[in-house]
Image 1 (cartoon, each protein chain N blue to C red):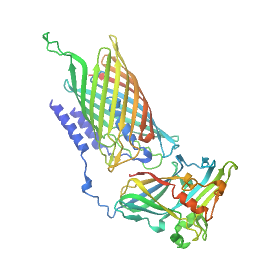
Image 2 (image 1 turned 90 degrees about the vertical axis):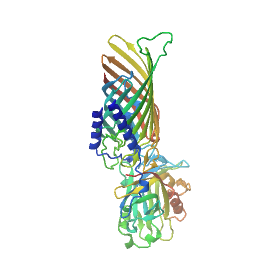
Image 3 (image 1 turned 120 degrees about the vertical axis):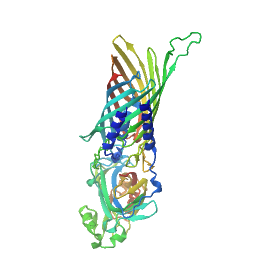
Image 4 (image 1 turned 180 degrees about the horizontal axis):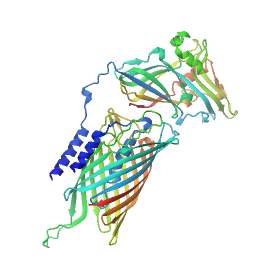
Length: 267
Length: 317
């Protein structure tokens, strides 16, 4: 019977200790001087389907499209913490190209941000494309990004500027089959500003720490390029979108609505 | 008893416990393999509620989505669990059930199979058994003083699941298994069971509740409710006792919390149907059962349990 009592006492102790909380709410962590890495994982899809090169996707009005080139520029990434403070990633490194061709075997493209202040972040804001201020820095002021953009085919010429999104492929509808589809949308120098920003709040707190590198999984719905705020048809001229002053702002607005934070990982 | 406990603690102390990584939504495997194989929906003992020491093998397989889209590729998981399990009497009404699993888990994704194996999370439950007796005929004087058992009994269990399973950290390449042999947490177990054993049929029911503790990564698996109902019959000869059974069992999981926040798509439930038999020859009890899910929605539908198969050999004490 003694053994038994001992065993039960031990069981109880274990349960109680397992259930007791550490109550660190009373002892806020000291985060000063700490910084960590934050990763944005872009995952392109079409509606609820994963995006795959060469796959035929249906859109509105009996039109469909296949894509073999999909890239867009993300810049001016900043995160806001639970106290309302904003951490802006350093300007000189704050422009990226999300290229589906660079995706890993899970179809994700990573943007890795180093030296982020440790904090509990609640939302992210970023721009699609390059803003006028950065463009106004001139070719020399672009740093390494200009070379990258050229290599990735995301620049018309210095005067015309960057292509914010580039979709190349073919489209079909009731009258044509596999006609060329090219969406090259940008700001067109300084005459037309198509730079847009989006703010996405996180479903869970993103905890950046010296020893914790959270990941933000962003779903980009490519169908929104054509069936977004405005529905556009290839048959109406949206098969070739380049520098048009009417078409490009519509595509820019559609693209700004294609991002969603699906989930986050705190590791 | 104290030797057993000492051993568990020893194992615990030796393990560098780290919580589960949650890449690609696979964090829940910790819960499925680390805890479910020792949970009430699997049963803690034999049909006849006999005391025993034995070994059990459980095979389970799952399919799970590796991405966030409808057509994201699926990986296949096959879990092999080898358990040393026992029900040890302490007094006439008090016994202990213990369970020490070894996990051998495989995950196949795009033609590549990854394996993780090691000691799993063990559990230890103390039980109090309340037997019911037939009403005694007041007119007859009972000389021998023995009450006649009615066959009905209730059991009350209080136990712990220990984080004896080692976590193996794999880095974030994207075919990261993330499935682990243990949850890294101490969990409390509360159980109540009702048994009836008659001449021809018997019924076992068990309800269990798991209070999940937080592990070192501030990860807290959702509390879990498990239930099991088995009905069996018996065919006896002088030498062999054959007891086929059918049953239903299931688990209901609350959502996982991390840093005090609920994670989406981490709750779920599953209802299983089982068919099996025990064969008792002398002091040996051989058992086999096959389990198929009847309905399920695990982790937002991202994980699908396919089937479960178990065999065991117990030596009655």
